[in-house]
Image (tube, rainbow, N blue to C red; front, side, top):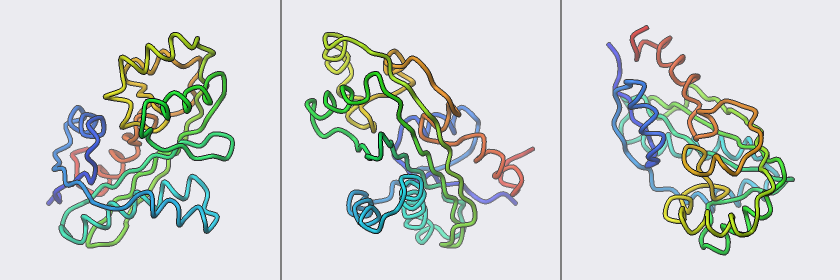
Length: 199
């Protein structure tokens, strides 16, 4: 008998992707101090890939301890640019600085998903993508932020590819779903082989 599925994320796009794929799930948002965990891992010399994986595991484990019989999906995404990790912008100025730094350059996204059951990780995957921003004008940069601030303040790098943010890019190499923050094809494949989804 299929087990219930819980998405340990408040992300609208992650919820939309699972809904559109007709995956039955509930949402339970974990409360963890992401920045403290991230800083501790950086001090230990962890790579951006490993940080995204660890954060996804923390989220899934937190909810799995409360719902041990469910399949709990935890997710996290890390943006890496020239060895630096960018976080969600806390202000319009921070968003502008991030986008100005990324403009005309390539950066990498690490999109991790961990599934926990009985308070233990049983599956994990980290998808990676390379993205190149075009050289856009300061006028467009300011107008873009002005139109999209309410949305992009929740996104690493101050853009959402599924929205106007796609206009910032000249090239994208990698899985589209991973760029949106959920390695969907890999998750669906696992849930199918484990008997949670009809195949």
